[in-house]
Length: 189
Ligand code: ADP
Ligand code: 5GP
Image 1 (spheres, rainbow, N blue to C red):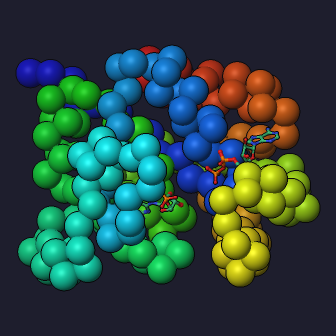
Image 2 (tube, helix red, strand yellow; image 1 turned 180 degrees about the vertical axis):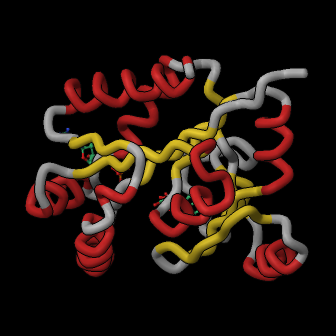
């Protein structure tokens, strides 16, 4: 029988640099598969249905949730996101390791269900001021959205020591090296 795949969860407040770091991880660790979640948010330019997310309506989402199709689900910044039980079980049971990008609620729920089998890495910005600069610098969000994300970040940052590892994304290259060492270690053990 195959050895079960590993569960690696990246959790970070919006604007920390999570997407930048995950992109590099995906390029380097080809054996890591991406956990494709379901979402009710609109597809962004460049995204592909079934690759980045499975995009569904709110009605379809609620139906799937009621049927027990999700391991966990959460409302994040006004949209629903859910981790698919079928998708994850098939991959893990067949020995494929999965990389997850979850908010703190999702990471908590995965840890509650998978315990030590799920390894969660919290990415922290060096400070709230730096996070704010990055959100503004990215230029993708309105002032209201930026304020909401900073408020959420303040409470999420209080949780930074509740996970298995913390990486501070100050200098990008150093943060990536710290992250890749952790991921290598998880995949080896
Ligand atoms: P998230 O996915 O966490 O919301 P992004 O990866 O989109 O964050 O990063 C937010 C912005 O900060 C982007 O413009 C990105 O290029 C920039 N950024 C990421 N990491 C660093 C870093 N270490 N130093 C400076 N800017 C960074
Ligand atoms: P985005 O819309 O920018 O892709 O993601 C927004 C937020 O939703 C991110 O913080 C991401 O971690 C979170 N997220 C994405 N998929 C899931 C999921 O399946 N479950 C949970 N709980 N959060 C998710």
